[in-house]
Figure 1: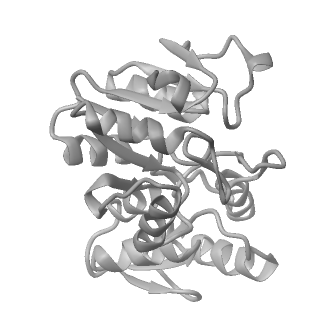
Figure 2: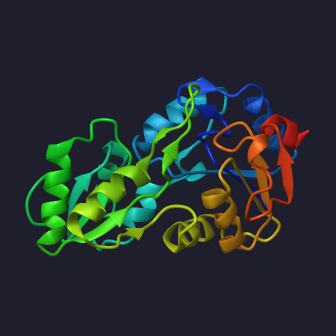
Length: 246
């Protein structure tokens, strides 16, 4: 059994820890539960995520984390070339896969993920490569990203801009899509008895459905009490991870 936890909106909001979440993870581990962190945010490198987890009081290793950047990298073969329209986490995941990464020019695929320095020049480079024949792969299609001040445009907004400019339908790697499902199944070996905890039914909820496990919704991120009921219907609803674990 494993607790498959989202990060943004479950453990933290941007750089602010959600109160009680670190203690909740510690309680789960004390009970002998496996905890796997699965994030659609591909912007940071693995070591940066692990350092952030450490800062909020949740020590973790590389085997405890799966990102949508890693899921996107799984869609390319070693030796292929990818144009990266994303953060360092995607570049790292692609290189670990043996994929050559570029910022401009011809490529086998364009990989798009959430990053704060997206601009018109980046949009032009990505769309031009796709129009020249590159596959378009998105790390995720989340329209928004949760912050303490409220939602801001997410990776799906950037992916949508490239897809519209190039006139193609992208392949999406992150939750709730098959590449992330396969990556988590491979990491855990057996998902029976597990549950997904997240703040977004359209990704975390559907991801739980795809894995065939229960979905626990926390209201500490994108989804609020006023948004209920939601689809898919969660098996549990709690204010936050601490309340859920208690």
